[in-house]
View 1 (tube, rainbow, N blue to C red):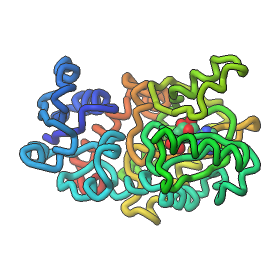
View 2 (cartoon, protein in one colour; view 1 turned 180 degrees about the vertical axis):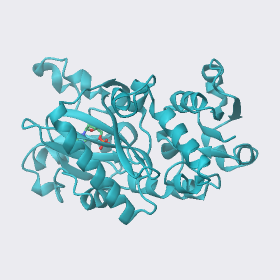
View 3 (cartoon, protein in one colour; view 1 turned 180 degrees about the horizontal axis):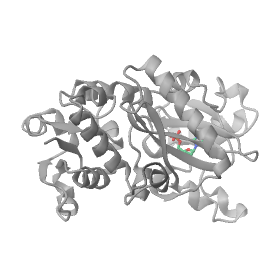
Amino acid sequence: MVTVSTLGSHCAMQLLKGAKDEGLNTLLVCEKRRMSLYRRFSFIDKIVPVDSFADILNEPCASEIQNTILIPHGTLISQLGSEDIEGIKVPMFGNKYILKWESDRDLKEQMMREADLPVPDTVNSPDDIDDMVIVKRQGAAGGKGYFMASNTQEYHTRRQSLIADGVLSASEPLYIQRYISGVLAYLQFFYSPIRDEVEFFGCDQRHESDIEGISRIPASNQVISNTPSFNVIGNSPLVLRESLLDEAYKMAERFVDAARRLASPGMNGPFCIEGVYDADARFSAFEFSARIVAGTNIYMNGSPYYDLLFNESISMGRRIGREINSAAEAGRLDIITT
Ligand code: AMP
């Protein structure tokens, strides 16, 4: 029987519960300081304790997970570099080679443009800022050090104050993007190379601190901080207007096609297109995640859209388990792993 493994963080509970519900064995690589949380759950068959997640690359952890299928999630990406991830010998669910396209801003933009996603304009130089922009760091976890500016002068003032505070270094390249005001939406999908079909799984919103808190403060008091952060604290469900779903599917299909061209073998498994609906309900995509997102945790007991598609309550974790079972039955685990 196949054993599914993952790192103890992000959406590990959902992944391993889903795998167990599909009759698979489960293994968790867990930092010792987090053991007390994960020991509570009986759907985890085996826990491999490590001092830090980077130990996954070394013995004895590497041997412990040898005969499993490893499910990548955000923590794997934030803890290991792309090269280390690609070097992992254990079969990984989906496409480990596409993960670097998520981590590198230039590759990310190239992929989104190839998919013809409506990406907010990039502003090439601070001198060209003539409207509200969001200034991003390369791989900033939690959007720390991001800032907003509506003109060149403001850009330089904010940047200098972040450098003075030690948040940014003077040589750090920054990415300037037009700020789109509207309703944030994180669109979750699954592409099955076995069925050759894109499935819309659901949609979530991220609650980000402290940008969210700032809107609760009267405008006159808001100038307390120049540097809001976008640290995700949790997620809540968002049900999109039904009239927006067709376009969501089309974007996802274009994304899957683009990924097949640029990052073979393509966007297999779960992914997310992240953006904003503006006042005309037009979507702008500022990000994608080429693996399961933690926002799917809101549907741990099943996505309403999967109920429509499959007449069953299925979480994203369970959907992955089912894909593994389908591939194993066909003797084609190679199609769904890299
Ligand atoms: P990112 O690191 O690109 O995912 O951005 C972190 C957060 O910044 C997002 O979750 C949004 O809240 C916000 N954000 C990023 N890009 C934009 C944009 N172009 N317009 C509006 N908000 C944005």
